[in-house]
Amino acid sequence: MPYLLILLLLTSCFKSKEKGALYLTESKPTIENLGTNPIIEDLERQVRLFEEKELEWQEIQKEALYEFKKIEKIVRKKCYDCHDSDTKLPIYGRVLPSINPVNHHQVDGIKALDMVHKFPLKAEGNPPQLALLKSFRNAVIDKTMPLKIYTKVYPFRKIRKKDQKKLLAWLNPLIEKVENFNDKYESINLDPTPAGRVKKVFANKCMRCHGNGVSKGGFGGMEDLEALKKSKHVNLENPTESELYLLSYNKKMPPSIRESLSDEELQTILDWIQAESAPKD
Image 1 (tube, one colour):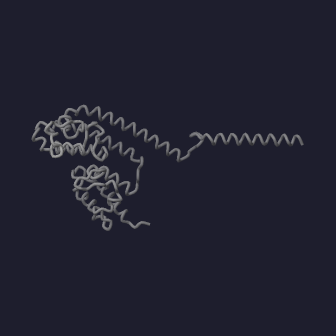
Image 2 (cartoon, rainbow, N blue to C red):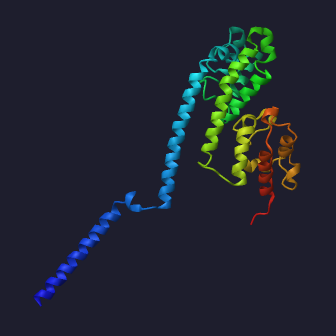
Image 3 (tube, rainbow, N blue to C red):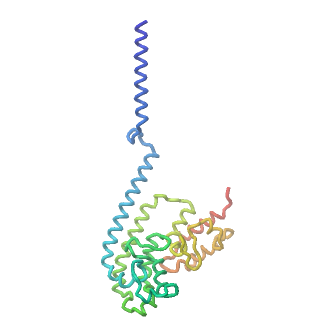
């Protein structure tokens, strides 16, 4: 009988130790003992991607600022009067600001493109860097900036061929780097739905002038897809007749031919309108 009692006690202690060990293990989970948990692995991958993305962007910014030194003299002389929020206008531009056309030019210029930080660029509505860089490049190539009314007063501030060459030597490589950067990290927060894909098109090609508080030509709010699909610019009954689609299809918008939407981008807009016009379950 005593032997049986001793055996029962030993068995009970052994089981208690086993349970205690198991409890300790479960109360302190670690990556090692979780094995190949797909949720944890995906979270780890996302964290690594975000960290990598931040470091890579810092490198792009650092190099862009370093290279900017080569064009800073040109930009300061020919762009800053209208595109630098730290630059003060001469006294004649500050008199009666509410009705002064010189003041208006600067206000509008800073809204469209503010180079106060050199890079990243700024603008009203915080459009993507790629959109701002391409807009800057278009103005350099087409010589639409500085404004003709400005260069009539200051003819020595025109963009000459040698200026153009130096500016493009900064812009082209930077645009390529930002494009590659965007493509590389597109998987982060990627929304593959028609609405998610059209948001990307609008952000890159439209919202610099028509979204996030900017409404050139009286048309804005493109960031609000719900309101946009109910507007006169979208025809849910006949998607291909939507003004939003036709203006892009006929190359009228964006105004620069260099920013015209690709066939894929046009199809993305059409896919979104068609998805919105389809009967909901």
